[in-house]
Amino acid sequence: MEDGLLVEEARKQTVVEVLVMNSRTSGGTERADVRSCTLTLGHRMIKMEIPKELRSALFDSLMIQIVLGIVAGLMLDGGMCLQMWTFSMVAFWSGCVLVLARRWKIPTKMDLVMIRWGFLILCLLVTPVFSALIWRLRGVAGG
Image 1 (cartoon, helix red, strand yellow):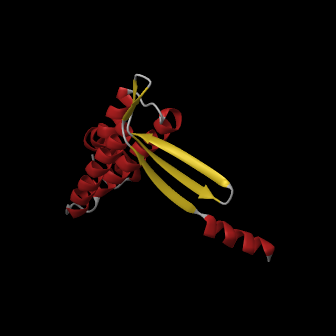
Image 2 (image 1 turned 180 degrees about the vertical axis):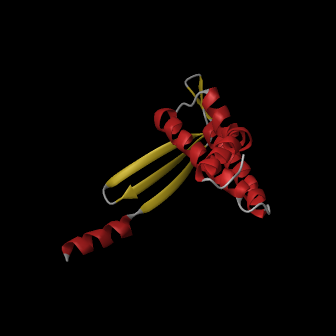
Image 3 (image 1 turned 135 degrees about the horizontal axis):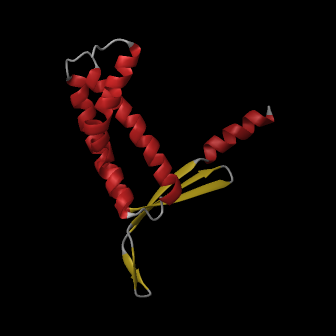
């Protein structure tokens, strides 16, 4: 009974705050624009600061993915384009998780380029080859 009350109390104490910190100069060095997200769960507090460049790259990538997903879903090809889009999504976000797990505070320029344009590269160049290979291994597509 007490465990249920503790869980309910933790749910009530869950607070999500989003703080926006503007660019400012401190000590001769310019501080980047950072959005800070604080998540409080009971007595634990998790604070993440996402750099502006990374936010921009992730936003651009999500917009590309949404537009291509809508286009792929509207094509009348029996779901082949949508399947390629899905394979690209899984591959892209798997790669993003690996990159962001290692260098999310200070991503390199190549990380930002690959986060911003990597999905488009996967979707247009790499995935059609793997999709055709998977269909061939299933015995569905001729070739």
